[in-house]
Length: 371
Image 1 (cartoon, one colour):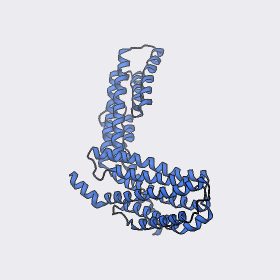
Image 2: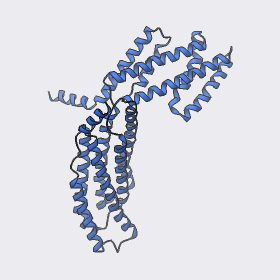
Image 3: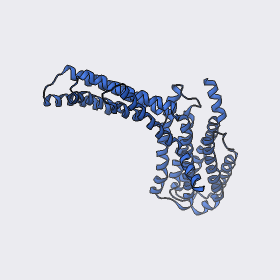
């Protein structure tokens, strides 16, 4: 019983990926059935196209469909025009046409990667007639028809079969990123007492950077869905900008904590720094949970109190002149930590507001307004 529950929990935690697997399977089978029923020359391309356009979210499927269809139409027109206007009768002639078709389209695709399909399509339009003894115009029409069937099938499946909205995915991605920031923040502040080498600092920051790239990609997909009126909800911009600023705060704190503070300063700041680390990390993790569950933001008052205690301790350290006799580099790092925490305080207040906007109540209101 426990094993079955554990397996169910594992599957449930991967329901987004499972939904994609089901959509891809349905799209492939449906595309092949439709292409066969329409007697298309190569149902393979309909199936492959359906796989390409069936993506993790509806927003990503829209972009993949647009890019692939535009690239296919452009490549079919260009490849067909070359084959029709420049007839050939030898292998050398075909080789020359292939160079003429591939070089310009490869250059265009290098500038605009969304048109990668154009090069592949032009090659197919040129070479398939040599294998099936058909004319280039028919080859171009067949290619566009096959891709059209696959694209429409994949897009419909993305809409109708366990649809996954990027607006929902952005909650989970932002929550994961906030948890990474919380972990990094705790570890970096601990460096004020023991120091840290640059390799460890890069290791901490790399995971956050990778997650930030993924969050930005999902944000673009969510905005694409909103623009097409396929989903409703808050603007993703404030959430993305707030999380990015928090990431910058962690970077600044990391630079300031590579070398530990002087021993006498550590003793005076140990308790308030521990409070700051605990309270801010708890707030970030609670905000992450609130985003996932669609509830209001956690109380931010403990953050205000902890940072006020730290500010009072810093003022006491400065009043007693504990930094005065140390090097300029030590003083610079001491004040940089305070500045970074002040900036982080402002960004945590913004996070408090943004998480409230992303609560289910706010989302429901936005949906009613959209309707």
